Image (cartoon, rainbow, N blue to C red; front, side):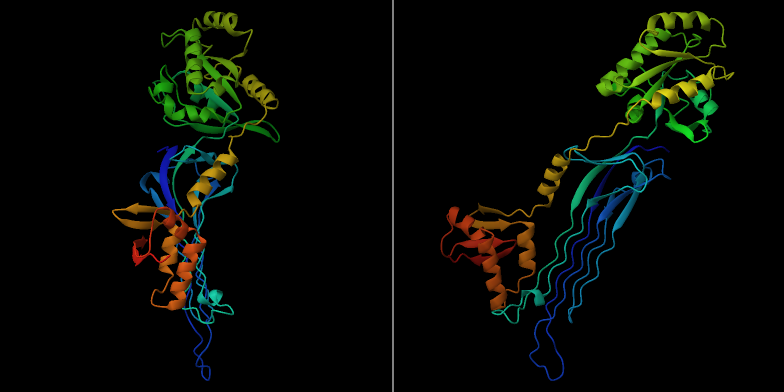
Length: 424
């Protein structure tokens, strides 16, 4: 099954907690602190793999988590880092933030990597909190939580040239005739249920990738038929081969067909109409085809290059291969625009350790990931540890915010589930 879009959630690993430990050796009864740091949490990394052709693997599993970092231990032993989670996706995959739609990365090259969720830092062991005043700290830092993202993976096949046109005009036959691709071919609509790729060779060391985009119909840009599922793949191509059936077998007007397909391209994206199109008149071996061919030339020859072919007999296919290659050499490669400023702002907002202070039902409440880590790393039964807790609240502006909200001596304050009386 061909799957070209998937929504998944990813979570990187939490950092390990720092250790509270002291030297306990023979003849050293009052050894100093020697608790080690926690390990870093594993990151979630997406890697482009040219061996993949679909996002099928993400259809059945939607949530992915990297390993947590291990806690530190005594003797200054650091916790081991969590293992990174590497997810392979096809070359040509866009990574978007589901909430905002911002494009985070465009993996266009084999082995290109993007770290979508960075692992949390490990907490510091108590040895890192020792100083000339605090000789035996009985607290350590807790690890930072991993990042969580809901993302959209959107595959846009990377091809130099795209074959477009109504169903049953002969696109698959042309693809199979000039490449080694073997698409399913039959005389009925929507034989092609997925885009097919093939390599066109035009000489020693000269080739390009051709994609057969499944048949579009009127209303495709609004979701009719299968068109909306595959229009995104047209965006990657440099030029388009617009195949028209001039035999009249389907009882359609080939001139109207051309305008209808281009209208669907325009509705989906104005950029698609800017791509160069070569009109390919197919099925010239059938009766009455020549008459229609002349009519189409009169209509479009001023604005488009027109090539006559018969995919069934092979007539004109060599000319088509070479003309497409000649035009390719003159077209600049397009890249998906990734707004680095937007991405940076999004990541900054999601990664920021926000602290909120509010008043609820007569109680002052302070919350945030940073405060949660502070609470988890505080030994409230130890005077030094509690003193450090109060100092951090003051340094981070929590005390000042409580004052501005009207907190007075003796008022109840809740910091991430821990309650105590406000002391100014």
